Image (cartoon, rainbow, N blue to C red; front, top):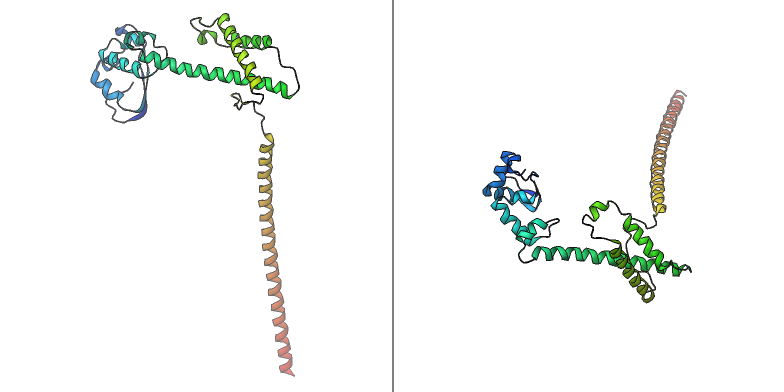
Length: 260
């Protein structure tokens, strides 16, 4: 729970309220916090960039401060599962319009990706000299994938998606893909969301080989450097011994010449 006594400012504040319709079931300190406009205003102003509220709308609507706050929130941002609040506060459909715009963008992007992928599949068959898969089989495969999508209780809780809707949508998109495949015989640029591109293991092995070769080269150079150092030390010792012997010989010759 956010505290008004905490003077630190955080980037994001997460506020979680107890899920209960009975005010007596909530902890007394939390009740005081939720009901005190000054504490709420001060505490929630500690967020620098954003505020995430995980709450039970009917409970928060018991307090005047939260009613005003939720009215403002529903007018400014799309809210997921906000039927209760929006029905009360969204007087000019601003929240619903913002929400439908968001889902329209998502829906348009999904349809574009689906059609583009089907076009690329048709072009792939043509480039390899193969007969494309019949349209009815493509439709059946798409419908089968939709029916096996899990978990269905989360994806479609209200039973909006039915066989008639999905079959009509898929048939329309497949028809559009066939028309585009005729108009655009070349594959369109598209990313693969599941990483289905060819993995370049060759580069990985070349990198490993390069590291291994570099390691062997470094070890070899160190060994050669050590060997050359030993040889240099040995040659210096040999030269020193030869110089010592030469001086001894010179001394003997001098002594012999002096004695004669």
